[in-house]
Length: 142
Image (cartoon, rainbow, N blue to C red; front, side, top):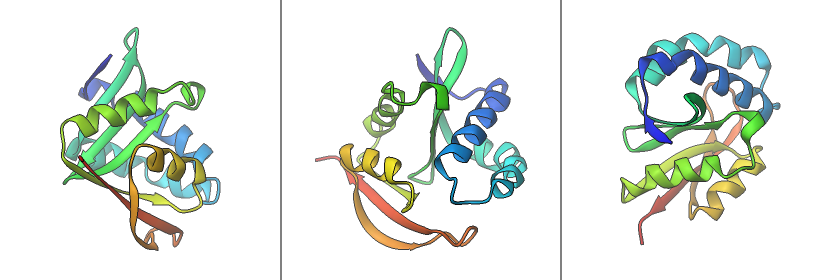
């Protein structure tokens, strides 16, 4: 089931975010991700429009949109490869005509996922927080 974020989801989503971030972004020091937990809890999750994919009352994945940008799409590492990320992305896309996102260039799995979903690279740059190369990708409804 996909549903809107509830405040009671916060701890579960932070666990998903941290474990998935550490797995997908091993090129960024682990301390960076751990240092971001407070900002995720206090600023990013409350300010974003977030959808949660749950099964049996347990959140397994989430997607957050902020100011027309896909700010987060994270699936619990144990559930990756099962189509949950695509289901969430399709739910987000169904409500919009255009969507942009930033993704680390070194995260080949994510960039390939977004390309398969119809996103195209529109810019390249560097994340000011990590210094890592990143791609800005965009999708528009045909």
